[in-house]
Structures are given as C-alpha cells and as structure tokens.
Image 1 (cartoon, helix red, strand yellow):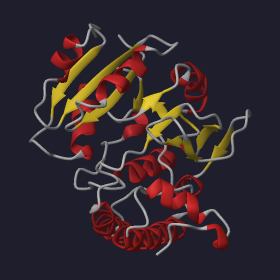
Image 2 (cartoon, rainbow, N blue to C red):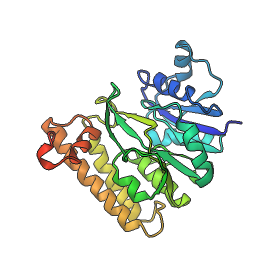
Image 3 (cartoon, rainbow, N blue to C red):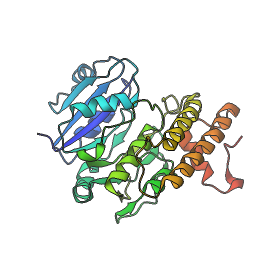
Length: 285
C-alpha cells in the first residue's frame, strides 16, 4: 500500500502533464501513488506510455462528466486514493525532488504541512513566493494562508480531508479546501522553502481573460456559503475569513480592470506589483 497519494486533476493538459508527472517520479521519497483524474476524456496513461513513462504507481480515473471541474476531478481521485497521506499537484505545475521527503515528517507530527509555493514564469523565473524564504518551520492559520494570495499545496493526513472539495466551486476551491483542513487540524505547519513551482502561463484557465469574472462569481458564492454556515471555519476566525475573502474579491476586481486595460497578463504578476510602492507599480489601470 502506498503511504502517500497524489491527486492530480487534468483537463486538456497534454502540453504540461508529462513535466508534472516526472516531477513526482523524481521524488526522493518513493512510496507514493499518483491518481490522475481525467476531466476531458484524454487517456493520460497512454500519453505517458507513448513518452516512455511506464510506472505502476500511476493510475487514472474518470470524472463524473467531461468538464466537471477541478473540485469534482480531485474528489474522483480522492475516492480512489489508498494512501494514509494526501497531496495535490496540478497538471501544469511541478515539484522539487525533496517535496515529499521534507514535508512528510512534519505531516506525520502535526497532520498538515505545506511548503512555500513559488509562483514561476514558464522559463523558471520566480515571480514571488508565498512567504519569505527561511529554514525553520512555523505554524500558520487560515487567515495567514489566505492573505498571501498564492496557492498552497499541503501534505496532510487522509482523515482531515472530510468529504473532500465543495463540488459546486470552480474557482478558489483550493483556498476553501485548505481552510477546512486547517479548521480540522488546528493549524498548518509551514516549511518556508519553495518546493512547489506554481507555473504561471498566460493561456492557463486561471489566467484566461475571463478568469477574473469566474473569480468574482466564486467569491460571491463563497461568501454566501460562509453566511449560511456551509463551510467549516477555524474557531473564532469566521469574521476575519470573510474579510479576507472580501479583500480577495477587491484585488480580483482591480485585476479585472487591469486585464481590460491590457496592462496585466497573469494574476500572480499583477499581485506582485501590488506589493511594490505605488510609484513603482507598472500594470495598474
């Protein structure tokens, strides 16, 4: 039985998934399985074999329907998972070889651990990391995680997953899922080293010209769920979490204005400019 299951949602990922898969196969820790949830009907196992990747640890499952969305795809992979620990890797991202071996001792101790995601250009240039790079692990809460504006890809005990992702969310579903993980674990242990490369491609779904409109709809949906108690939140943090989502919505609106004005291409590049002094910002509308 594998110790770790990696869940990978894949939709029209033919151009990127081989690099993602190879970054898993290159892990120093080898007791894992990778479950690819094909949300487009593509046979990604055949694609792997055609490119010389023969690995019995890699499996594939279908989603309930073509284009079911990332939440449904990850839930399909979760349903097939055999590992006691789970992690998420998107089909257009990559891991450093020590990702699993570095996070596993922390996840075994606390139940939930993440590294310091690096938002990257496809050429390998770093746009930003979620946190300053450091050596010593520390605990972070849900609001801290949310306020970075950079996705987190933790390693966690299976029992913390609850019923999985909110299937009706198609944007920011990972933020909500991670927030619920923290609510169940109490906190998330951060290893402040960038072991996940979150690749920023202008043509990706997250950076499509309409992505800010999808985000606006999702943030409204999430705030309504919070109001109706449909999301598990850490004790005492509901108001702060609502403020954090409201701020995300404000930043998304500013990003949308920059996209319309033709001065922004990816949200992470836009977000990086917001951390600069006003006089140095170059992609504001």
